[in-house]
Length: 132
Image 1 (cartoon, one colour):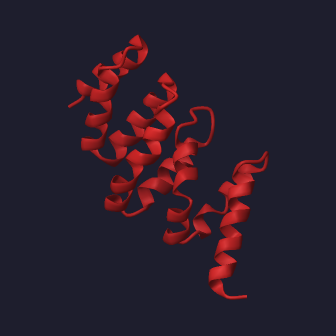
Image 2 (cartoon, rainbow, N blue to C red):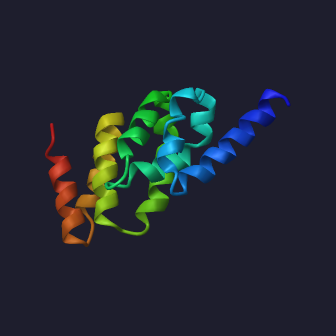
């Protein structure tokens, strides 16, 4: 088999395992992934990055390992789809991630949260806008 086919099969298997009870097994393979393979799985890292009661730190590290300009150019679309559910925990996790990735993104999301109708989300936004 050629490397392209092997890589596609590897990514599909990894995606399936990340969604199963064997997620920790899948996460152990992260160091062996190329940058392109990590980019291919971008939406999976974003979904894992929002889960406070999961190994989100691994997803955050993967996202930080990708080319910063590429992540900044692509992350809002993925995050916005998740934030349609209007969950306070999602805002909280993404504000923390954005603070690590890009202050401009963090500020933009904090402004969005600060103008939210939900008091808890609004409070988060105000808190993050006050950060230096």
